[in-house]
Length: 574
Ligand SMILES: Nc1ncnc2c1ncn2[C@@H]1O[C@H](COP(=O)(O)OP(=O)(O)OP(=O)(O)O)[C@@H](O)[C@H]1O
Ligand SMILES: [Mg+2]
Image (cartoon, rainbow, N blue to C red; front, top):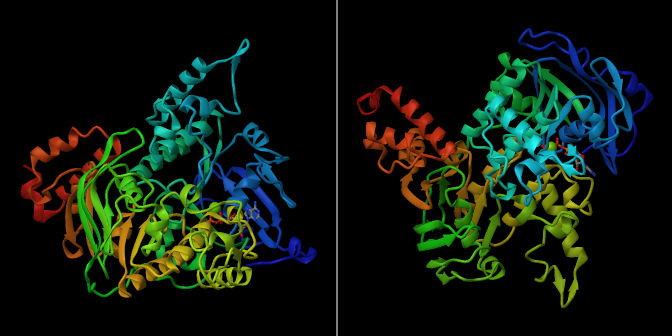
């Protein structure tokens, strides 16, 4: 981690690696939309952005890559006026811009979708979009006009959103659309998307790319941040890479591969494939029988579900988000009451146990929503690392905390998990998104475990960290831990799991050994087809009747892929 110090005069006068900027690869108009010149931003002990130069041309998608903590979000927050640069200048449309707050940025036509959504859960879509940009009629908010404009924008860009729905009732993919409409509502020519696809399914990501293409066609310029290199290669016209606050290179996606981008980011070769031997499963550690769980709206989210996970194996749960996975995990970890059936962990009844009892049974949980369930943002990193163990030895002596043990634990884990921070006393909320995730993973993986439950374990992590976390999960398995993995990344499920359970409508449609779990079969099951081998016209009708858009898209994609598979033509072209 780069520490201390302001830039020397010599450094400031030197052009950075980004100069001169390469024009967009697609030969688009070379007019410059945004220019960042020698911009720096320092936090205590961290050079988050160190003399950065960046040029964004009109009508291009510039991919911004970099390891966790490289300074991507900070740079974007500077452009959006959430932070003020300590040094350097920003030019918009050729004019020097003084951006002191987001209102200044919005006035200049800059819109931003943040890494962590900024929506108010108890307000409606319309109210959220109006926030900070309220139109009034007389003494009252003109909600009707706002609602009308939202419907127009939604129709124009194919963003399907109910303007009256409450944010808290919407799946993340739809919340993402709300964030985008919010940016468009304020008429932006320059859109910053900070890891917009981290929480999206592949189908939802494709939907977002469609929107981005429509925006480009209208002359909007886009900065796109993502750790998913496939996406970067697909959608970006140019790529820029940051490392520890500095620009270290640029790439043309047409001449790049995932491996070459990964190497540019991390500075070494990254193994993108997971290397593992066949599992040696032992006794069942997690036994779920006939489980019934309700969601927040008191609808049955888990319907008479049964599943075993054995010592020494990884069971992956595949499924379109919203099919009961979240409620299932919450029930196992004691965060949600169960209404029927039972859960045994390590041969002990744990159906109605408290989270603490479950933890003490040897269960670790990496939650899907790290900021809600995984950490206490204002607490220092070192305290977040003992959230479940602070009352046990060696971290406590009688009623007193043993600071020395807590510090030593944090120092060791921060090093082992490569958490990029100036120190263990920094509040976890101040870390970059990916580094927050590393702290949570470090804490959960460092106890004596029987059962490891990981939901979206690599969400927001850079390729190097994903490689590391995957290795740790395999290591846990090989040491005899039972692992239950939930991930929206089908690639992650297929590369880590020994068995794949497909969840649909609150039930497990089937459990496949990894050797039989090909993408098409899993995709069909995710769409509710319980016997993919027999998929035919009837199944296609079923898919057409699916009302949930994401599920339908998943199913259609899969059917399309299956239809082009020569070995299955007879079944799909009938
Ligand atoms: N408000 C803040 N106070 C102190 N340090 C901060 C603050 N915001 C960011 N940092 C630090 O600045 C560095 C860059 O963080 P930033 O969030 O820009 O990284 P990033 O490239 O977006 O990473 P990620 O991929 O994990 O989102 C990190 O070391 C982070 O801890
Ligand atoms: Mg970030």
